[in-house]
Image 1 (cartoon, rainbow, N blue to C red):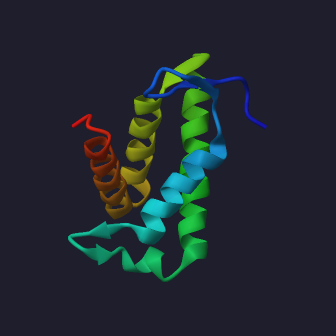
Image 2: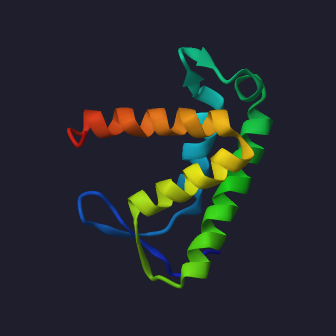
Image 3: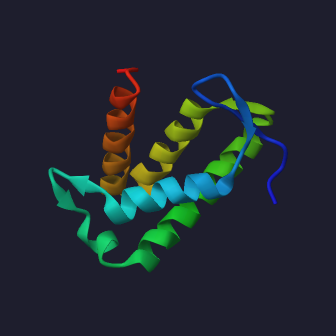
Length: 111
């Protein structure tokens, strides 16, 4: 159960923090992530390993949020925390996560 932390989305909506969304984003980056067109092989061939990483990063992000004692956090701050922890635990996944987020920003016209 997560405490009452709200996330300010890019469109200004405020939604409750959802640990599962962080887990899913990290899992996708680990399992489907590519660097220079190549899968991050150890995670791509082992979804359990990718899921373990995703769960750990999500928990660390949540702990960081609790430490701030903020009730509202911008989505970019969440993503920065994800990258911070991925850079320590799995740098290549962090690079894949950043690549994906950059592509999404461009698709939204926010480059």
